[in-house]
Amino acid sequence: MPDAIFLLFKTHIGCKGKKSFRRFQIIFMLSALQGEKNLGVICYCKFYIRINIVLLYQINDWVVKLMYRRFFKRQADLLISFGALLIALPLVAPVLLFIFWKTKENPFFFQKRPGLNEHIFTLVKMRTMTDRRDSEGNLLPDKDRITRWGKFLRETSMDEIPQLINVLKGDMSLVGPRPLLPEYLPLYSDFHKRRHQVRPGITGWAQINGRNSISWQQKFDFDVWYVEHINFKVDIQIILQTLKKVFNKTGINRSAGVTMPAFDGKN
Image (cartoon, rainbow, N blue to C red; front, side, top):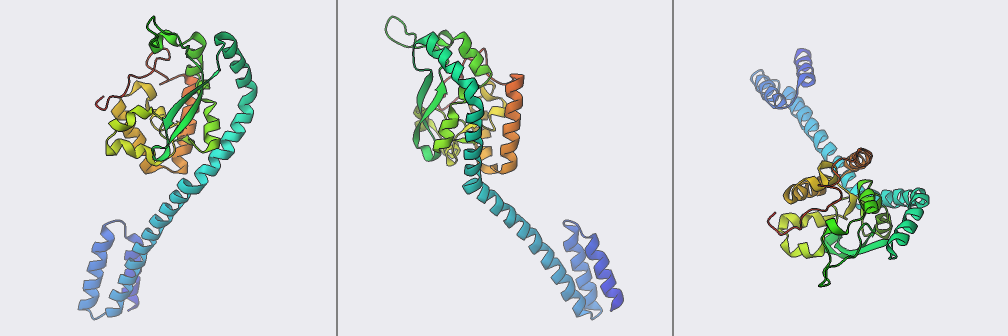
């Protein structure tokens, strides 16, 4: 019996992956032939405990991710956005005064956007375009309305800073799918709608993987991937990559701050 126990111990230490089940079968069969029933029971218990440890780890990992998504992510949003607003205020205030002086209009730009569960909220950004219109009263294309300083604000992402207010209000998160226009909602498939299972973000997985230089389908694929894989590690990665891209000015836009073409449900 001591030799059998030693064999079991040595085999158990060396087991990895699918081989563990095969070795368990071999040992159990040999022990049965030799009348060593206890050996088979001990081997079964070792194997059973091992499987349960793996399951316990997976369940624990799932609980941690769920707790982050439901509770800790929101607390982190509040803490970081409040601190960021205090730090950015001395820089943002002169910019807002400059915009008001140049446009004689509200330096903030407000627009309705769908958020969590498609709830409509008011998005806040810095104004980067004028309200110039043609002879018939229609707004001119974006490329004709965007200003020189507006391009700079977009290239540095400074126009997004007021959205920290949306984060504090609970409309948005620091990280999540970017909020799009309400008129896109009827065009969404069930797959597209999954992006609204979380709060929209100031930055997101699509932003660090191409932003406006990728197609709409790629953007939705990245958004849904984030919804399925949301966790603390991914959020930190996105924030760090966003800061890197802002400083390097990569993936900002297709050309000098011009926005993407409208989504039509097919593009």
